[in-house]
Image 1 (tube, rainbow, N blue to C red):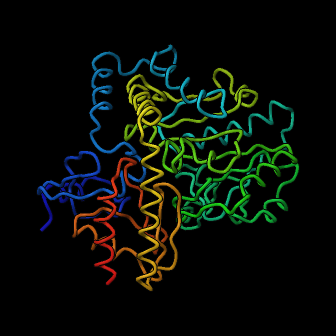
Image 2 (cartoon, rainbow, N blue to C red):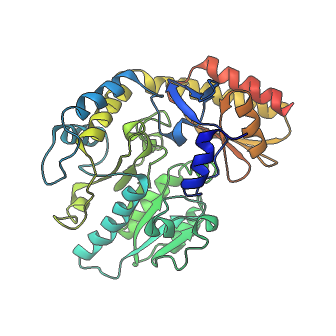
Length: 393
């Protein structure tokens, strides 16, 4: 029988999600509890959002203190937490300027608009097309939907916006053939998260950088899922020795509070003058106070070390499972953005894991994705591996 909460939700909330029949009420670290008191080890983390785990005491304190002081005043005025987190982002990345918003989709909207505006300011109005990747995911607004290379995401919303072309991810020849004088930018995720945790081939991102430079086009990295430590470095591009011109962040930026950001080089960011783009709730004192604390913990504690070490261990254990079970086709990923590709539907395994006290998720129908908090331990990984081994057996 459905709980009262689920029955009410099914009556009043838009049915845009296929939800599991549990009501989560509390979290601590890598564990969440439902209304019946059952505990689950969380390998979803709000879909790569709660990188520092649930109810982190220092983040909770920062939010509470800021909420009691100043929550919102609009971007007509300066606020201290916003300036401080922007400074930290700039000091630790390729970028010179930051634009704050509320979500990954908004960050990608800003990146798309900036790329087009930049070339309008350069008196190149015919240069407005953007190349994105097949199997990509950049959001569900009309512009980011139009830039998403998955037909199932775009289905039903035609006509999408014009100006977007698609090439296969990891296909440098296809990218080279597509870039011409009409292209203002190439937009790609360093690792395709929603697309199945597909990693770039060796040299692919560097080659994309070279192609953009030769053509005078911009390179945009969507790091909404890969950023803020998920791959073992602060930003995924650091693993591949290549810097973008524009980068988008969200998800883990404020460890669960709604926050997005677009970062850009100053020469490009200048195309956004006063009034050209805005976000009422972008970078409020509340969310930037949380993000400031998140950034401090990520860079001053040993969380990135843990992500690399436990991520390597986790991947080795997944490969061990692959050797034991023929249903597993491939293991992918970097850091704590990992996946197993199955030769069969994956939803059954998600449900079985939940019954045994583990939350994982399935993407693309047959890909089990693992994106736990970056504080996850080897012991928690071992427990999940034992669970999966038992289920596969």
